[in-house]
Each structure stands twice: as C-alpha cells, then as structure tokens.
Amino acid sequence: MLDLKRIRDDPGGAKAALARRGAAEEVDELLALDERRRELLPEVEGGRARQNEASDAIAEAKREGRDAEAEIAAMRELAAEIKRLEGELGEVESMRDELALTLPNFPDPDAPEGEADDAVVLREVGERPEFGFDVGDHVELGERWGVIDIERAARTSGSRFAFLMGELVTVELALVRFALALLSGEGFVPVSPPVLVRERPLEGTGFFPGEREMIYEIPRDDLFLVGTSEVSLAALHMDEILAAGEVPRRYAGFSTCFRREAGAAGKDTRGIFRVHQFDKVEMFSFVEPAESPDEHERLLDLEERILQTLEIPYRVVDIPTGDLGAAAARKFDCEAWIPSQERYREVTSCSNTTDFQARRLGCRYRPAEGASPVHLHTLNGTAVAVGRTLIAIIENRQDAEGRISIPTVLQEHGAPATIPSSRQ
Image 1 (tube, helix red, strand yellow):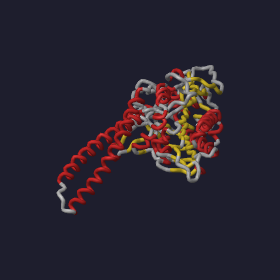
Image 2 (tube, one colour):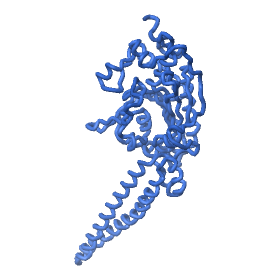
Image 3 (cartoon, helix red, strand yellow):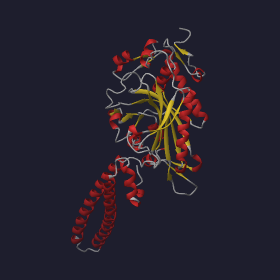
Image 4 (tube, helix red, strand yellow):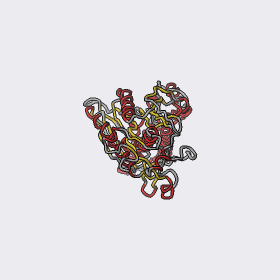
C-alpha cells in the first residue's frame, strides 16, 4: 500500500510516478476520498462530544425533576445525524481503502520505460552451446529416458501437470540442496513455509486484488494455495515491530507452488515450463529502507552465482515499468538460453518492493531504542525455479545420443553424472 501522507504532500510527484505505470488518474480520486474522510472525522467526533454533553444535561434535568422532552428530542435528532455521518464515513473509508489496494508501487526512477518487449538487456553470461545435430527439447529427451511423463499426468490431473521420474527427481532434490546450502552460507535461514494462506498475506504482498484469478482458492476453509513462498515469507513478521539489531532478516523458502495460469492457454503448454504445480527455492529479505538497493543487487548476484555454478548460459534484463508486478518498484530477470526455442527464457526474477508490502502487512522496525517504528523494505528473488532450471540443464547439456550430463555441483549433492546413468 502506498504512503498516503506522501501522496498528500506531493500529489504531482505521485501522479507523475504512477503515470509511468498507467495509474495516474486514480490519484485524484484517492485524494478526494481521503479529503472527504478528513472532513467527516471531526464532524463525527464533534457530534459524539455534543451527544455526551446532551446526555449529561438530560440526566441532570431528570435529577432536578425538570421536563427534559426538548433535550430528548434534540438528542434524537443529533443521534440520527451522527448515524448518517458515521455511515458516510464508513463508506468513504471503504472506498478509499479499496482504491488504494488497487494502486501499484511507485516505480524506481531508474526502472526503464515501456512494456514487456522493452526490457533492457544488461549483460549476457556464458557460452551458448553449439550442437552438430538436431537438438531435442526437454519433453522429447525426458520421455526418451523415462524421467518425464506428460501423458499419464494429463490423465491423472489434466493439462499442465507432469510426473518427474527416476533420476530426474534425484537431480531436482540435488538442486534444492545445492541452493539451500549456498544460501545458508550467505545468512539466509532455510524455511519450509505453509503453502495454504489466508487472504490477508495475498492482499498484503500485492497479489490481490489484481491477480486473484491466478490463485487456487479453497472456499470451504477460506484458504488459498500460494503461487510463490514469497507470500508466506512476507507474512512471517506480519504486525510485528523488530528491533534495530534484528534486521536484516533473510529467509530461503522451499515449497511447492501452485498457479492457475489463467489466460495463458496456447502459450508454453508443452512440457514443464508453465505448469500448475512446481517447486521453488525463494529468497526473501526484510531490510532497513536505506539498504534495499544494495540488497536488491545482492539477490541478483546470488541468482547469477547459482546459474554460473550450474554452467547455464543466461542474460540479465531490467524489467520496464509496464511489466512490473503490482508490488515491485524495480525487477531484474535472469533468462536462461533454451536451445530448442533458440531464445532466452525467464528462470529467475528478483524485485525490490520497497515499503509497499510492509505497509500492507504491518512489518516495522524500531531504528533505535525509544524511536518511533518505521516500515521495513522487503525484497524477493528466485534462487531456483526447479522445473525451468531442469529444462535449461536438460537442453544445454545433451549429446548426440540424447544423454544429459549433470553439472558437477549437483553430483556433489547426490545427483547422477548423467541421465541415463552409467548403471543403465
């Protein structure tokens, strides 16, 4: 949620910032609702004070045996007016808060302009493999070696599901162990978070109301399946005030994630690139406001270290304002080279959400003893999106016979040297 005081103090600056995200028009409406609320509050409070005075006067008249009918009639009229004002105040507050929830975060001044196609390539890292044969995609290779089964998953669960089998599961687990070991060494606390959450964490992280159609809902229990453990991790310190010595807080969440992918029919439907259920290791940081730009670079550096260690060629792109999620002020994506598609595809992203999520979730810290609490800044970044990382490994490390060599670092965490292994 945006800082209303900041918008009141500099409405022109707020409109200019949100204009970069196509949301400038809502600022005037928000300010009008906020101004009406600020007008109504003293009217309601003044009416309640007069009501208390009138009540005391009636009680005094009755004690003295005087006729209080006139005072009682005036009291009823005042009560009706207060009720009307309270009703309007409640309606205005509801309209203001609902509108505020729809507004995206202020974009970082350095975030590039434009839509998805306007992403700025910052660098390319690693050599793309050159094959002297027709490359197979991950589905073809996975089915050849019996480690991916799309057809049976479709019979079991419908489209956009897959069975991962045999040695590929061992590679998946090695990926997770590798990522968690690296992040633990960098001060991230491993977390296995809930994947079912209430509505407030999704609203607080900015996924609601805008992305509600992407989330699986369980109405009977008023719970939702998360599309990323960012949601659960952000709520870890909901409505808490941390001491200055307790920040930064860094977490590495490993969980299964669920997304409906509504509206994406016909796009990336083959294989395991865009599925309804997938595993992911997610980084999440709570930091002091002044530290969030450096923390953003820290998360990006860790994402790149993981891709480099896995020997996956990739590029880093700076996401333009028109393609940012609601909560993000700035976002970097790492895109892996996918040989069968002859293009780079997103495998990780990291976002600085500044104080946007912290305001919604009540995550604050006290800069010094006795000081007033201040909202933290939160950041998130994908360490390993398992399915997409497996695609990059399978396709970039295939040979003419379709055998897949597994990165050495994953072998150190229990993965086989090849798929199929030498034992087959």
